[in-house]
Image (tube, rainbow, N blue to C red):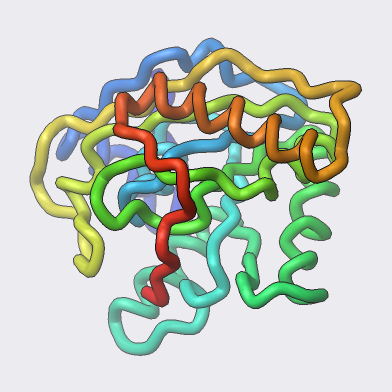
Length: 221
């Protein structure tokens, strides 16, 4: 199993492998080439680290704009990680700024790259899986690429919300499901909602989380 990627000038995969020994299941569902969306649950900032380490291909992550403007050591660390991951900035305020995330992601996908996003839109406040927002469906339909559901387990114990650095914890797991093809599906509001709900159902099967049929409250940090 390849575990190698860099954040800036620092190679973090060996530390992840030695320190936490992450377990990866279903890696064969991630294509060796071609565009695809990795859509997962979101428990911790560490999700990006372990997902990025599990896949040998480069992944461009969607990340909220607030992560790029933080102050102090925590802000510097978060920016360094996300910039090293090739993160695509997502402005959650709506309007033209919010659409910039799609403008950044669609060319990556059409060029054969991988983009990872979290349909919940924020980290789970209590470990449960919340209703997905339809951005994942809009992106899949617009780019014409499959969605690969991802379930991550244990990262909330390694880096709880509010903690700057990962800490020793249980062995995390990254579980990949079979690609979901939405070619030809309706792109109206009802169709996008249906696609999103299907993706969230597969994520729930992989993560084993309790599902909450409402949006998670958004966090500012």
